[in-house]
Image (cartoon, rainbow, N blue to C red; front, top):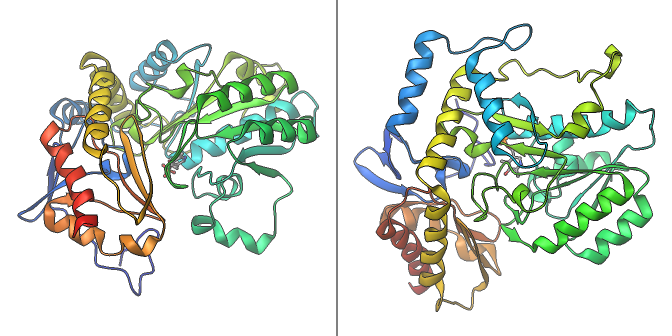
Length: 399
Ligand SMILES: *Cc1c(COP(=O)(O)O)cnc(C)c1O
């Protein structure tokens, strides 16, 4: 049987069985649902997009996968070339992997080894944010800060290798003063912390972080697995503040196949580029650079550019602000909106109990978590479909 994610198998509600999908819609048999969370924020072009499906099929007719150990191929070469041109600064060196968690692990390994390769063995610590979520593998759990996901780590006691701070500049400055010489990186979900509760914060914090990283010679890592490809209303937050390492996942393939990439800048790459074989990055996920994933990612980026997705996202934000403007309820602590993300944070998570089924009956798929009732819709959504998603959220509180 299937062991489902984040669920108590004994008491969980049975999942909805999806039989078909197209555009923003999921079909559970004859029941039609708008996917308001884009399959964990990845399906930015909607389902069954003809151009995306077509590139996968034609690549599959050549080969679906060959390993990148000792081999290479055009889809991986073209995607790395495209990312190199498309991403800001010298973020030019693409290390592919099969999931966001692994790509963050790779970034953390790069940051640690970058200093080891220089003989600086005291740089063993990571700075990250309170409520951070960077994946469910062990080091990403340690860098993360979310008891709901990561409570098993309590078995080990507090980690001496990670410091968590709130998104406040004084805390940032104090931590650099205290630990600046021992940190190898500051890892952050920039502007929008997703799975830790859809928390939004100001760019000034990241600008200050960039300055302090330069001052103390610490690498800045942006985990844009969730925020990348326009979700915050910026193409990448890295366009505003330049990190040394950028991690992309989720929407990278338009949600077609799991794939992710850790992109290093020239400074990081040069920390490994050496005659000494011991200075190589010893990592290599079996399915890194998968040809189907790379082909569909390239096509996804092409659609993002040629169909001006940034203006679609602006429109989504405008409609969301308009529709939520005069809405409030005593059970809601705050409504937050940023780009293609809207979150109503409630005081008490029990006030969201039953929402999923309520939304299902209204024709919307939603999956509240913690205190968050949120939507991250596919960017191709039509105005009336988005209004329906937001009306469903409001209707829950007006019952
Ligand atoms: C989802 C997510 C990850 C983990 O990605 P997976 O593909 O699920 O391993 C890492 N970081 C952030 C910010 C995420 O939202």
